Structures are given as structure tokens and as C-alpha cells.
Image 1 (cartoon, rainbow, N blue to C red):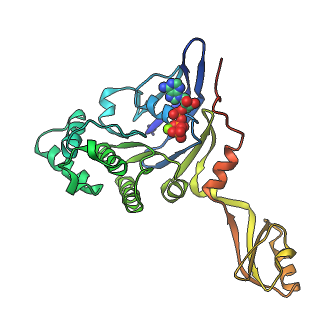
Image 2 (cartoon, protein in one colour; image 1 turned 180 degrees about the vertical axis):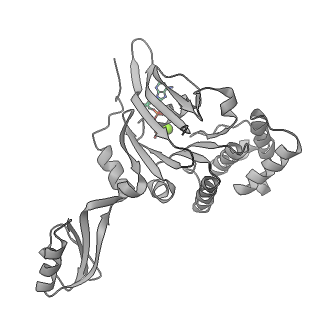
Image 3 (cartoon, helix red, strand yellow; image 1 turned 60 degrees about the horizontal axis):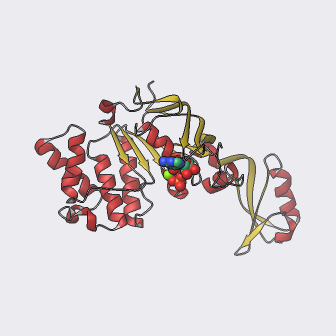
Amino acid sequence: MVAALEFVAVSKIYRGFGARQLQALNDFSLRVEPGEIFGFLGPNGAGKSTAIHLAMGFMRPTSGYGRMLGTPFGNARTRRRVGFLAENVALYHRRAERLVRFYGALSGMGGPSLSKRSREVLELVGLESQSNRNVGKFSRGMLQRTGCAQALVNDPELLILDEPTSALDPLARVAVRELLLHSRAQGKTIFLSSHLLSEVELICDRVAVINRGQVVRLGRTADLLHCADRIKISARHISAQSFEESSEENGVVTFSVPAGSERATLERVWNLGGEIVSVNPLRRSLEDIFVEATSAPVSMDQGMVQ
Ligand SMILES: Nc1ncnc2c1ncn2[C@@H]1O[C@H](COP(=O)(O)OP(=O)(O)OP(=O)(O)O)[C@@H](O)[C@H]1O
Ligand SMILES: [Mg+2]
């Protein structure tokens, strides 16, 4: 199957003044399958936006290559089948509806169907009542909503979103989440860079964590969160001191033990006069995984080659 997005051994070195160079991506490889919502995570400066800009063809890799919907990065015809939202939404100062129509026209759309679609996408992001206002006067969240609308106008097969919800209020976030799930149900692919890990956890089928320009964790979200080798046990009527690294809330003591030792632990709880409340595989949060994968101290000088 043709990948929706594919990076093959991509490196990107930014050249600064004199001999200063910064390696933003280092032998970076990643494959995003059609029809998935893919979470692209990493600390500030990890190389996420760089990877996205390379995919969009805004610049070229120093080495390596990549494909978007089966064609090499930078293909203008493929670009028309893709929706893109930049991390810092910078839009021409025009009325919102005109602006969205302008982006639709860039993707080869036109006529009454474009006008209809522009109104539709502005409605989808909750901006229908603002569509005649100049975006130059918009708030940050309204700009981000407009950015989402322009990314959707051409009904793209692949949506590339660089932190699409960072400025959105909770209601708008829920709306964007539903919109992304709806797009997936229609068979579209979504490549989503975000620092909002709880949202990523909710909607992404797979995630990659990158650090210093390389993939340091990759997997199905459910598999990463499921920690098969530890069991979480909650019990009542026991002292929190009886078990290491336990926590207590409303009289319920919770701790985890290695898988395989749960039977012996349950017996110990009963022998202490305790009562078991629950026994479950330990689930970790995406934040735990992110911190673990990227915990090497990060210096803002990282990647400096010279
Ligand atoms: N145009 C540029 N010229 C020189 N260096 C750049 C340029 N763009 C990015 N960089 C550097 O490349 C590295 C990766 O930056 P990038 O913007 O890709 O990170 P990011 O993962 O998107 O971070 P954030 O989470 O903060 O958005 C950083 O060290 C950054 O300073
Ligand atoms: Mg970025």
C-alpha cells in the first residue's frame, strides 16, 4: 500500500552565519499509513515543524527523501490533495470567507461549489457569523479556526496539522477533535503535531515521539499506554505503608506490582485484613511515555554541528 506520508533517512541541516550549522533532523525515517490519525510528538526544537515543512515542499532535505501520497515531496499536483495548517497561522488580511475561497482556488476549486464549500468549512469551525470580518482583526483562536477552515476547504485526503488546537477554547477543541474523527471515518489521513497529549491520547491511532531530530518512540497508542508487565492493585482497610510506592485516596490504597506476582500480593492483602477493590493492568499516560522518551537534558544548543 502507498504510504500517506513517508520520510526515508531524511536529514536537515540549517546553515547559519559563518560556519554555524544546526542539524534539525538526523537520519529521520517515518511512515504514515492511509486512514490513520498519526500523532507527531516531541519537545520544543525536536524537529517536528522542520519535518512538516520538508513534506510540504517549503524546503529540501539536506539528504534523504520523502513521499506524500506516493509522489516526492514538493509535487504541486499532490499539494492540491493535501490540507495544511501551519503552527503560526499567518493569513492575508482579507474577509474570512474570501480568504478561505482564495485557498480553495489555489487547490484548483472554483465557481459556486467553492463558495458553498467555503461557507460549509467556516460553519464547521464555528465561524459562520464572522465570515464577513477581516481576519486581521481576529483573535488568536479565531485565526486558528480560520486556518483549520482553509486546510479543509479542498476536502483533502491528507491533513497535516502543526499544533492546530494550541489557541482554541475547550469547545472549539472538542469540535476539532470530532472533525478529525469524522475525517478519519471518511478514510482520510491526519498527521497531527501537538503538545496537548491528552487530546493525542484520545484520537491518535499511532504516535511517534521525536527528540533531537530522530524517532525515539513509535507505536500504536493503545500498546504504548498499556504496560503489560505491571499490575495495578487497589485495596481498602490496609495501611499505605504496607506496600512500596503506594498512594491513598478516600481510604483506598493503590500500588503496582510486577505481572505474575498479583496472586501472592492479593493473599498478602487478605492476610493483613484488607479487601481488594480492583486489579487491572497498569495504564500509563502519554505524558509518562513522552517524559521517559525525551528525558535526556535538552539544551537549546542541541544539534549544533559547528
Ligand atoms: N529556519 C531555520 N533556521 C535555522 N534553524 C532553524 C530554522 N527552523 C528551525 N530551526 C531549528 O531547528 C530545530 C528544530 O526546530 P523545529 O521548529 O522543527 O522544532 P519543533 O519540533 O517544531 O519545535 P516546537 O515544538 O517548539 O514547535 C530547532 O533547534 C530550531 O531552532
Ligand atoms: Mg514546531
